[in-house]
Length: 199
Image (cartoon, rainbow, N blue to C red; front, side):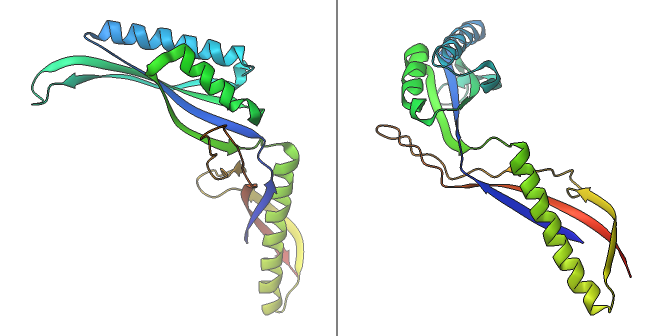
Protein backbone atom coordinates (compact mmCIF):
# COMPACT_ATOMS: atom_id res chain seq x y z
CA UNK A 1 0.00 0.00 0.00
CA UNK A 2 1.31 3.45 -0.87
CA UNK A 3 0.87 6.37 1.51
CA UNK A 4 1.51 10.06 1.04
CA UNK A 5 2.56 12.38 3.85
CA UNK A 6 3.25 16.05 4.33
CA UNK A 7 4.50 18.12 7.23
CA UNK A 8 3.94 21.88 7.11
CA UNK A 9 6.65 24.26 8.26
CA UNK A 10 7.04 28.02 8.24
CA UNK A 11 9.50 29.07 5.48
CA UNK A 12 12.65 30.56 6.97
CA UNK A 13 14.75 31.11 3.83
CA UNK A 14 14.58 33.51 0.91
CA UNK A 15 16.00 32.24 -2.38
CA UNK A 16 17.11 34.88 -4.88
CA UNK A 17 17.67 33.82 -8.48
CA UNK A 18 19.68 36.48 -10.29
CA UNK A 19 21.61 36.77 -13.52
CA UNK A 20 24.51 38.85 -14.81
CA UNK A 21 24.28 39.52 -18.55
CA UNK A 22 26.82 41.50 -20.57
CA UNK A 23 27.07 42.49 -24.22
CA UNK A 24 30.21 43.16 -26.25
CA UNK A 25 31.45 43.15 -29.82
CA UNK A 26 33.45 39.95 -29.38
CA UNK A 27 33.16 36.74 -27.35
CA UNK A 28 36.21 37.32 -25.17
CA UNK A 29 35.08 40.79 -24.07
CA UNK A 30 31.55 39.63 -23.28
CA UNK A 31 32.84 36.72 -21.22
CA UNK A 32 35.40 38.83 -19.39
CA UNK A 33 32.82 41.49 -18.47
CA UNK A 34 30.28 38.91 -17.31
CA UNK A 35 32.92 37.08 -15.29
CA UNK A 36 34.14 40.27 -13.59
CA UNK A 37 30.61 41.42 -12.73
CA UNK A 38 29.65 37.95 -11.47
CA UNK A 39 32.69 37.93 -9.16
CA UNK A 40 31.73 41.40 -7.91
CA UNK A 41 28.13 40.27 -7.27
CA UNK A 42 29.30 37.20 -5.36
CA UNK A 43 31.64 39.36 -3.30
CA UNK A 44 28.76 41.73 -2.51
CA UNK A 45 26.67 38.75 -1.41
CA UNK A 46 29.53 37.59 0.81
CA UNK A 47 29.91 41.08 2.27
CA UNK A 48 26.19 41.05 3.14
CA UNK A 49 26.38 37.80 5.08
CA UNK A 50 25.48 35.19 2.46
CA UNK A 51 27.57 32.17 3.48
CA UNK A 52 29.64 30.17 0.96
CA UNK A 53 27.22 27.23 1.16
CA UNK A 54 24.40 29.60 0.20
CA UNK A 55 26.10 31.14 -2.88
CA UNK A 56 25.93 29.14 -6.07
CA UNK A 57 26.54 29.86 -9.74
CA UNK A 58 24.30 27.91 -12.06
CA UNK A 59 23.79 28.38 -15.78
CA UNK A 60 26.41 30.10 -17.92
CA UNK A 61 26.46 30.75 -21.64
CA UNK A 62 27.13 33.03 -24.58
CA UNK A 63 25.20 33.61 -27.77
CA UNK A 64 25.53 35.89 -30.80
CA UNK A 65 23.34 38.94 -31.43
CA UNK A 66 22.19 39.58 -34.98
CA UNK A 67 21.12 42.64 -36.93
CA UNK A 68 17.43 43.30 -37.64
CA UNK A 69 17.51 41.15 -40.72
CA UNK A 70 19.07 38.30 -38.76
CA UNK A 71 21.83 37.85 -41.28
CA UNK A 72 24.84 39.49 -39.66
CA UNK A 73 26.36 39.00 -36.19
CA UNK A 74 26.65 42.40 -34.49
CA UNK A 75 27.93 41.27 -31.11
CA UNK A 76 27.71 38.70 -28.33
CA UNK A 77 25.83 38.36 -25.04
CA UNK A 78 27.37 36.40 -22.16
CA UNK A 79 25.47 35.51 -19.00
CA UNK A 80 25.82 33.68 -15.73
CA UNK A 81 23.04 32.78 -13.30
CA UNK A 82 23.32 32.95 -9.51
CA UNK A 83 21.30 31.30 -6.75
CA UNK A 84 21.60 32.95 -3.35
CA UNK A 85 19.96 31.70 -0.15
CA UNK A 86 19.32 34.38 2.47
CA UNK A 87 18.65 33.16 5.99
CA UNK A 88 17.39 36.52 7.30
CA UNK A 89 14.43 37.75 5.25
CA UNK A 90 14.78 41.37 6.33
CA UNK A 91 18.18 41.57 4.57
CA UNK A 92 16.87 40.88 1.07
CA UNK A 93 16.38 44.54 0.12
CA UNK A 94 19.89 45.54 1.18
CA UNK A 95 21.34 42.54 -0.63
CA UNK A 96 19.58 43.39 -3.90
CA UNK A 97 20.85 46.96 -3.69
CA UNK A 98 24.37 45.67 -3.12
CA UNK A 99 24.08 43.29 -6.08
CA UNK A 100 22.87 46.12 -8.29
CA UNK A 101 25.70 48.33 -7.09
CA UNK A 102 28.31 45.67 -7.88
CA UNK A 103 26.94 44.37 -11.20
CA UNK A 104 25.32 47.57 -12.45
CA UNK A 105 22.81 47.41 -15.29
CA UNK A 106 24.04 43.91 -16.11
CA UNK A 107 22.04 42.54 -13.16
CA UNK A 108 18.63 40.90 -13.64
CA UNK A 109 16.56 39.33 -10.87
CA UNK A 110 14.74 36.30 -12.27
CA UNK A 111 12.83 35.43 -9.13
CA UNK A 112 12.55 35.53 -5.37
CA UNK A 113 10.85 32.73 -3.48
CA UNK A 114 10.43 31.46 0.03
CA UNK A 115 11.86 28.15 1.19
CA UNK A 116 12.58 26.15 4.31
CA UNK A 117 15.45 24.05 5.55
CA UNK A 118 14.67 20.37 5.25
CA UNK A 119 15.46 19.43 8.85
CA UNK A 120 15.62 15.90 10.21
CA UNK A 121 12.52 16.63 12.30
CA UNK A 122 10.42 17.82 9.35
CA UNK A 123 11.46 14.85 7.20
CA UNK A 124 10.66 12.43 10.04
CA UNK A 125 7.23 14.03 10.49
CA UNK A 126 6.49 13.68 6.75
CA UNK A 127 7.59 10.03 6.81
CA UNK A 128 5.41 9.31 9.84
CA UNK A 129 2.40 10.91 8.13
CA UNK A 130 3.02 8.87 4.96
CA UNK A 131 3.32 5.63 6.94
CA UNK A 132 0.10 6.33 8.86
CA UNK A 133 -1.68 7.07 5.58
CA UNK A 134 -0.50 3.76 4.13
CA UNK A 135 -1.52 1.87 7.29
CA UNK A 136 -5.02 3.39 7.27
CA UNK A 137 -5.54 2.40 3.63
CA UNK A 138 -4.13 -1.11 4.15
CA UNK A 139 -6.31 -1.66 7.22
CA UNK A 140 -9.42 -0.74 5.23
CA UNK A 141 -8.61 -3.23 2.47
CA UNK A 142 -7.66 -5.92 4.98
CA UNK A 143 -10.99 -5.42 6.75
CA UNK A 144 -12.85 -5.79 3.46
CA UNK A 145 -10.98 -9.07 2.91
CA UNK A 146 -11.82 -10.31 6.43
CA UNK A 147 -8.18 -10.16 7.54
CA UNK A 148 -6.10 -8.05 9.89
CA UNK A 149 -2.73 -6.41 9.38
CA UNK A 150 0.22 -8.33 10.75
CA UNK A 151 3.84 -7.26 10.90
CA UNK A 152 5.46 -4.99 8.34
CA UNK A 153 7.61 -7.00 5.95
CA UNK A 154 8.83 -4.27 3.60
CA UNK A 155 9.04 -0.46 3.45
CA UNK A 156 10.28 1.54 0.50
CA UNK A 157 10.37 5.30 0.36
CA UNK A 158 9.61 7.01 -2.92
CA UNK A 159 8.18 5.94 -6.23
CA UNK A 160 9.89 4.51 -9.26
CA UNK A 161 11.59 7.86 -9.84
CA UNK A 162 13.55 7.65 -6.57
CA UNK A 163 11.41 10.36 -4.97
CA UNK A 164 12.53 11.40 -1.49
CA UNK A 165 11.27 13.97 1.00
CA UNK A 166 11.46 17.41 -0.49
CA UNK A 167 10.14 20.88 0.22
CA UNK A 168 7.38 22.29 -1.94
CA UNK A 169 8.03 25.98 -2.60
CA UNK A 170 5.70 28.44 -0.97
CA UNK A 171 4.26 31.28 -3.00
CA UNK A 172 6.69 33.73 -4.54
CA UNK A 173 7.80 36.53 -2.27
CA UNK A 174 6.74 40.10 -3.01
CA UNK A 175 9.90 42.16 -3.42
CA UNK A 176 8.43 45.48 -4.50
CA UNK A 177 8.94 48.63 -2.49
CA UNK A 178 10.53 47.94 0.87
CA UNK A 179 10.85 44.23 0.15
CA UNK A 180 8.13 42.65 2.30
CA UNK A 181 8.64 38.89 2.39
CA UNK A 182 5.83 36.55 3.40
CA UNK A 183 5.66 32.84 2.82
CA UNK A 184 2.70 31.31 4.60
CA UNK A 185 3.56 27.66 5.21
CA UNK A 186 5.45 25.12 3.19
CA UNK A 187 5.02 21.35 2.95
CA UNK A 188 7.79 18.79 3.25
CA UNK A 189 6.33 15.83 1.35
CA UNK A 190 7.16 12.18 0.78
CA UNK A 191 5.67 8.88 -0.37
CA UNK A 192 6.18 5.44 1.18
CA UNK A 193 5.16 1.97 0.02
CA UNK A 194 4.62 -0.53 2.84
CA UNK A 195 3.89 -4.26 2.69
CA UNK A 196 2.23 -6.06 5.61
CA UNK A 197 1.56 -9.68 6.41
CA UNK A 198 -2.15 -10.45 6.63
CA UNK A 199 -3.49 -12.69 9.38
